[in-house]
Image (cartoon, rainbow, N blue to C red; front, side):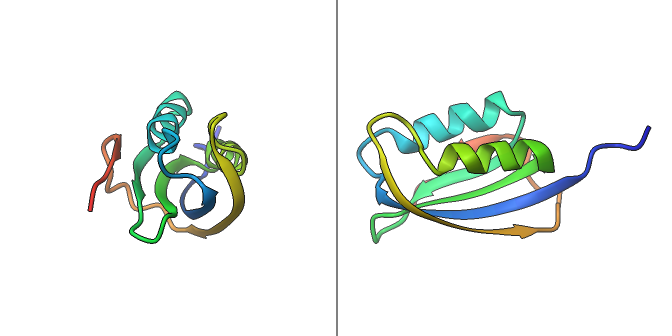
Length: 96
């Protein structure tokens, strides 16, 4: 059996997504799915995510990002698929 396809997902989440524990919940969800990468707030009020792992798990993660945690109001998610690089060893919250 072949290994599962791996990929990289970059996403920008817009809406009421800062000050609602979005990063902490995102980190928790990514780890639950076995993904690696990072999440951070941007200076303009959005949340940015870079994650790698099995493409199927990344697709599930993207669906979660479209809603986020209960206190968040996600208005839009822009995303792009990239090639897997293997550069991350865990998932963490990044700061500016």
